[in-house]
Every structure is written in C-alpha cells, then in structure tokens.
Image (cartoon, rainbow, N blue to C red; front, side, top):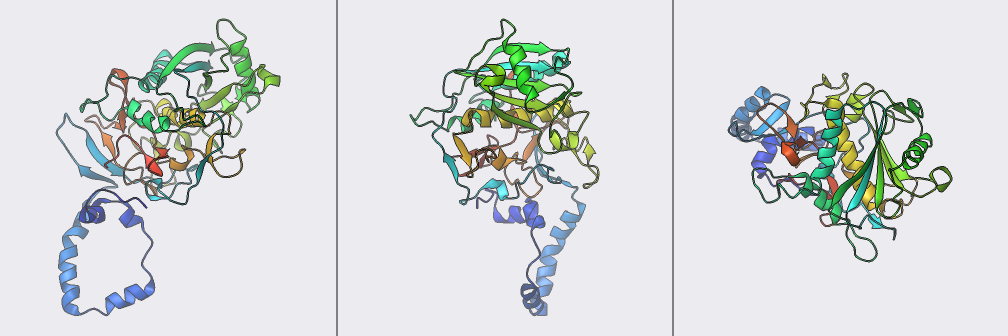
Length: 387
C-alpha cells in the first residue's frame, strides 16, 4: 500500500483517510482505558488543540494556501461516485493483475481522432473538448513550472504501455476529422448497436474517412440524447464496430453530456447526489464553468486512455473476462490526486476564482481528470502527485 509523502503528523491531522478508518477493536479500547491517569491527562492536553482544529475545519480541508497568484491545494471529502468501486488508498495494490493479452495498442504516430458530434453542440463546448484533446500532445507547457502539471504529463502514463513488439502507445494526438449530425438522424434514444449506425452514417459521408489502421472514432452526444444504460451503469464506453454494421472493424468510444440527465453521476465531483452529505450541483466548481462538459472531459480521458491501450479488447486489462475487462481507467476511477480514496478525490488545486483542477492544458485551459493505473508503479498515477 502506497502512503502519502506527507509527514506522519500531518498525515494524522490532514489526511482524510485517518478520519475515515474503521473504529479500533474493543480490546484496544479496553487496554487504553487501563492506562494511568497521568498519561491520559497528558494525552488529553496534547490532543485538545488538534480536536479544536478538527472541529473548526470545514468539510473541504485546506492543506496549504499560497498567494493569490498561486493555486490553493486541498483535499475535499465527497461521497463516493455511484459508479465507482475504488476504495483503496490511491488505488495501489500488489494484488491487481493487469496483464497484456497480446493484442495491439495504438502505437502508430499520430493517433488520429475522428470526432462525431451527435445532436446540437454549441461551439464553445466543442472548442473546450478539442482543447483538451490537443493538450495531450502539446509541448507548450512542458518543463515550465508555471504551467505544470499538464495534460501531456498525464498522458505519459498511457504511453508506458507497449505491444508485443515493444512499441509504446503514441504520445501524439491529432484531430483528423469532424462530422456533425445536428438533425439526430438516428433519433434521440441510442443503444449500443445503434451508435454503430451513427458511425456508419459518418464514414459514408465524404470527406469523413474510414481509417482502420491508426484512427479512432469518438461519438459525443449532446445533453438531450439518451443512451442505453447511460446514468444507470455507464457514463461512457469503448468497443469496436462490427463489419456487418459499418463495413470495417473500427475502435470507437461513446461519451454523453450528462448535464440534464445525471450530473451527480457522470459529472462527479462537480455534482454529487443531493441525498449524500448535502451534495448537488456546485459541490466543486468546474474549471471551465460547465458542469456537463467539464465532467464529460474526464470521462473522455478515461475512455481514450483505455481505447489506446486496449482498442480491440485483447490487449491490456485485468480479469479473465474480455467482455467485462477492468482497464487502466477503471482501476483509478474517482481518484484525482495524492491521498485519494474512500470518498476523497485526493489533493487537487483551486485557483483564485475557486475553480477546481489538477492539470493545465493549451491556451490557458484547466482540467480535472482522473488518474490512471501505472504499469511501472503498480498504482494509480497522475502528474499532480506529491511524490
């Protein structure tokens, strides 16, 4: 288990996991009660200021506050995401057997992304998503302390994965084409099969190409489009198309905008269920002011990382069932910084406007994106890690 690099005393005072632990066994409580009165008195005097500090702290526990020009670091306590199963401290475990199953990864440079905008998408939302994707291979902020950590640094974890020839996942991303279906040609209620028909419609319309060698297709649905199992079991998914439906085997991912349907599920942690600890929209301020799209970007990142390391569902995953693989994003769902786990997203940053983020992108953008499983560390990793 990987512990926080914060000193033990600070870990006790500030690390939320210390207050989230199970109570000690009864025999421990009884043996403590048997201690001398003198020792109990000293212990009480020592703990009194700490208890006062804990009583005065708000639910969001500030670790350090810098000047207005620097971000504030904090580790907010939030209810677990309804779809998250991660309860481990920063997700680290020697028991997780993430294995390579001899399939391809996206090692060709560049990785060509073909965007399919399904429904009505305002241009500012499109630009925000494209800025994130183009930040993956951007070199503008690398090695610059003022812009670190970056989205490009986050993608480095993905690039550690290799295929059987030793070729790494590419670090270069290119938006190679866009297609907009603002008429909802396949309706506003999609299924896992009908979404492939959306892809087929797109690739049949010139000049949107069929790129089955180093292309991937992202289908992004507007906030008024429903999807089979959306909000109930998935916020996004990836797979590959069937030749019988599209004519080719093409890796793809679908992600929906949950703003009007279930922001408390799929835009976590910018919204949490109202019945959980006084949640609701605005629990954390999104970095770009759009709860739906800011939450969607982390899901896009999740699916893109898994699509790159497991495009045909026969490369990198844990478990023995390829129809339900546990992939590098699944292992770290709900973790965004050091000290995360058990309902804590981990230490992240907050700018002077109160916007929450953990990495920087191109054109001054900020994003809050979940961590990924590192094959080197055997733990969840991100560019904003304390160690």
